Length: 306
Image 1 (cartoon, rainbow, N blue to C red):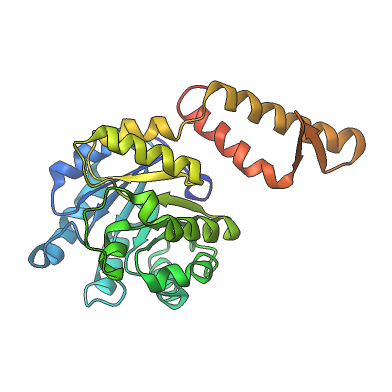
Image 2: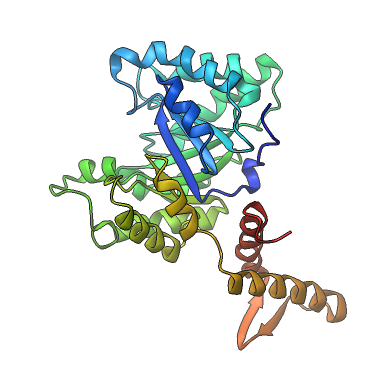
C-alpha cells in the first residue's frame, strides 16, 4: 500500500521525475525513486502511435504502484490536440482518486488552463471526486506562454505551479545550439516564470538538464535554479534525482534561520502586536514566512528536522 500522499497545495517539489506512460517498468522505477513527484508522460514521452494505448498502462500504474508518499502526476497531451480530452476523461474517471496533479503542456494563455480546469471539474462532479483536489501544473514553454505567464499563474485556484520547459521554448523561439548554458541564454523567460509564480503564490519548477549522464552539469543547473528562486527541477533519469534533491535541500544554517525567524515573528505578534521585526540586521515581515516555512517542510521530509 502507498503511504500518505503529500498535499499538493503545500508540497515539497525539489524533484519531479518524468517518464513515459507506455512503460509500466519505467513508471515502477520512478515510483520507487527518491523523487518528490513523479510525472507519467502521455505527451512527448509517447510516440503518436502509442498515445491511446498508453492510457491503459497509465491507469494500471496509478492503481497498482506504491508511490511511497510521492506526489502522483501525469502529463496530458496539449489542450489543442485531439488527444487531450480523452486523456483527461479516461485517466481521471478510472484512477482519479490515485492522482494528485495533472500537468498541462503547450499552454499559451489563461483560457487554456480554464478549459482544462472546467473539464476536470465536470469529471470530478460526475465521478464523486472532491472538486479541486486534483491540482494543475502548467508548462511555460513558448514565447506566448512567457508573455502571458502572470495571467496563467493566476488563472485558477486549482493551479499548483508553473514549470519552465526549456527545450520546447528553445524550439519555439528558433534557438539553434544545444541547450547547455541555460541560465545565460534563457535568463529572462526563467526569471519571468519565477516572478509570475511568486506573484500568484504558487510553486515554480525549472526544466530539464538533457545531458542526463552529465551529473556535474545537472548539479550546476540545479544550484543556479535554486539561487534564482525555483522550488525544484524536472528530471528525466533517476540518477539526476539525488543531485537535484541536494541542491534544493536547505543547509543546517538555513534550517536554524527558518526556525528562529518563525519563532520571533510569532513572539513579536504576541508581545507587541507588531508584524515586522529586525533579525540580524534584516527586516522581517509576513512576506518572509512562506520561504522559511518551505525550508522547514523540506527539512522535515528529508529527516533533517523532527
